[in-house]
Image 1: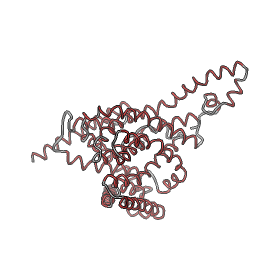
Image 2: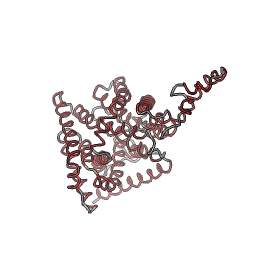
Image 3: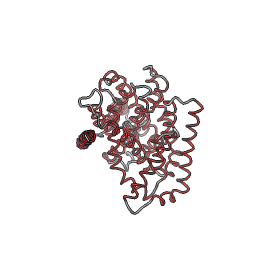
Image 4: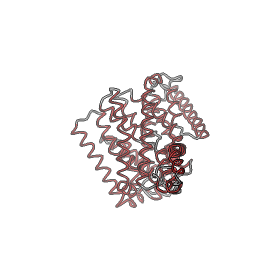
Length: 420
């Protein structure tokens, strides 16, 4: 009885604190993720108020949080949308991988953490936060902008890549041999291919089988199916998260919309618990030693994400202003980075504090970059273009200069109105 009482008190205090922190983040206009991480640091080992009775429950809740994050992400996309994104966005996805995964891998090797940790840190720096970016796009009223499909296409490519990356990382962390890792990867690719095929050919039948007029029955069936498939996937050493993502892809139409609305509150609750759990297992005293590497890595990968978005939007023939907006929008990191770091801490404990500091920096910087990258780039471009424009005016050719200037100059940007 005493243990149950302590469990209820600790859980109540944690959930209440998370609710208050979420309200505070909403008023300030930031993602609540950094506050959840800070709460975990405060409640964990070395924090001001360590938890004891609820730690095991929080660990289970964190697993469910990851599964629900990936399920809801899968529900956002249909199989046909994913196939279309693969066909049109794969060059942007390749550029995104090279520019943003390589800095993480290089940093891990320079720190002497070894090749497995390099693969993990590459994932931490590679994947943008779909949740934070979706919220930022809504807050800035950019959902209808012309660059937004480019941003979403890159996010879809990253999400699809996780279906391949996570099994590889899981196999490496488990110390599986090369042959075993190849088998795991083949299983993952086969599962993804099979799900996409079934969803394309028989998606309506699956959705009809799961569908129910009762919200209670729909919730129970979808949640139960997701946990079952996630468990089977994990038993096959694929990844519970990938299994949940594939379930989300297989559902479509009204079933996907209904399940999404029912599961969103559960996702928000257990995702918050996951971020707290990650903070619980990170010693606050371990963050200061890795703060400088985290700042350096955040600076480099902020620039590489901006370059990624700019290149992808330019490829889609978006205006210069839209290119800068796309780049700034992609900066935020969040849930995926923490998920990957959480998997890797058993092999390299130092990756946990570094990932925590890294995500804290970029989840705060991300909304700021989305808002201010384009105006700042416009000012810098204008200041550089000004001397050339003055010289052109001196010879009476200012009008011709504006018409024939580079697409990156302010004159050209003014000559062609920004397309939304």
